[in-house]
Figure 1 (cartoon, rainbow, N blue to C red):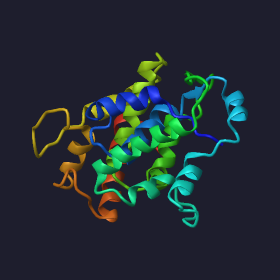
Figure 2: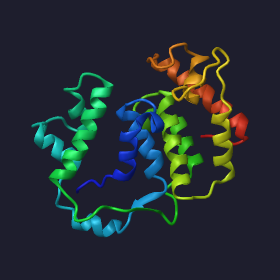
Figure 3: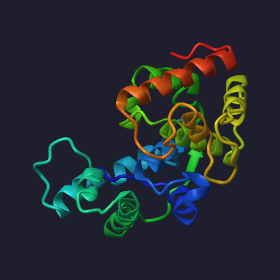
Length: 234
């Protein structure tokens, strides 16, 4: 079935990636969109759209056909596109271009409006408990920046759609805002809370660390969050 893409938020990210996801990185954009879309929003007339466009191919199906990649098994279209890209920024550009190509190839009769669900799909506290137990299942790696992007999307959605904040939301936001780097005292649009938190535990704020070390940093984060909020996470 055809995928439905929320171009309203995608366009905002493309126009100002440093404002929304900081780095031009596909995984961060997907984490951001997970927080923005998957908890509260749904396409208007969702069931009707699903039925109307059920015979159109999904993005994965289109990518496999275009690149003659029918034998790649369960890998998604991102792995197909990334194969020929130079680096993360090149992948980011090509990824967005491919989404636009897909939209042009399988046009909709009219733009889709996204509206809040009557009941959220998940409680963010319960969802974060699942993330603590199986972080890589949600984000594909153990980098704290993925959680930061997810929460940025989550909080922006609440603000965009004037959704109410519960006490956990408020405490969670305050916790991230209060994170300070004890090693360096720098400011700027790229000095995000996850970078500050990570730098005190690993000097290379952008570079990769071992999986073991990344897991240790995450566990420190969950424990600190629990102490700050007084809530059990996971």
